[in-house]
Length: 88
Image (tube, rainbow, N blue to C red; front, side, top):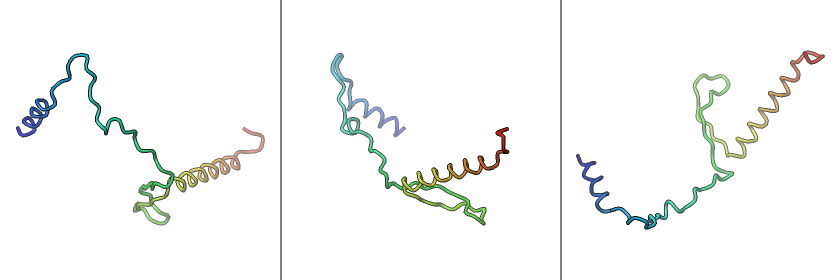
């Protein structure tokens, strides 16, 4: 009931713009979204070596990108080593 009263009050206070009149924009709508900084932290839960209990680990975005790139290169290197000679 209280929510309905607030909604009705908001509708009455806001009114509707006249036909053909541009709608007013608020400063929050006109402001661009903040860009991600390179030093922002990226946190996730990981099961650390020797434990099944995940723990929260945080890295900067640049460290996270470097870790992902290194992991990808290691995986590709291991896959290339496991292929038999001759390419089949």
